[in-house]
Length: 219
Ligand SMILES: N[C@@H](CCC(=O)N[C@@H](CS)C(=O)NCC(=O)O)C(=O)O
Image (cartoon, rainbow, N blue to C red; front, side):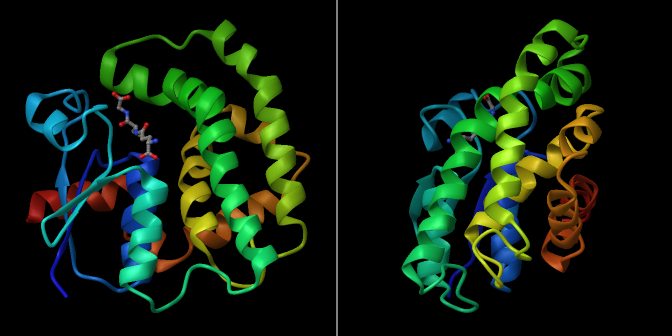
């Protein structure tokens, strides 16, 4: 099978979801780093008209939108399967992926992680405490919902790793670098254990921002 090429900003949680999925599948892939703040360059806009990352290239097929990429990878690389056969478990997987996109990223990750990490590191901005505080009620609901859906299971859709974990854990893991993480997870030890379980996997260890930057330098 030909190589998978991933255009992404090292550190992007969406990009990490794709890279960690490729790692779980033990597929050969190449990360082409998109420098921070250049996702709106004409070169990148030609790949992704909305100017975001990640973008996958495979056999001349160009695909953006992380959920579409993850499902594509699970179809073209069937082993190990990352979609449950059981309809209810598969529905839970889909639900968690949508919660991750619509509620965890929108209004939580793209506010709190942006204010605490992306803005200060890459744009010289100072965190706006009022904006962060305003995002906390939604963040509490998101964390409570993720904790409820996880329950006592090791993974979001049951006993086995699925695309839901690979999609949502990078978003949650990015938030774990902010001071708000401790407050948000205090009532939910199961979520803390879930993130630790994911972060310990070789696929997550191979896709930390430090590892991706080191690999890009070595290439
Ligand atoms: N719906 C998109 C969202 C991707 C996304 O928002 N990526 C962020 C990085 S984590 C991005 O490209 N931000 C750059 C920007 O907004 O200019 C997907 O699922 O791939």
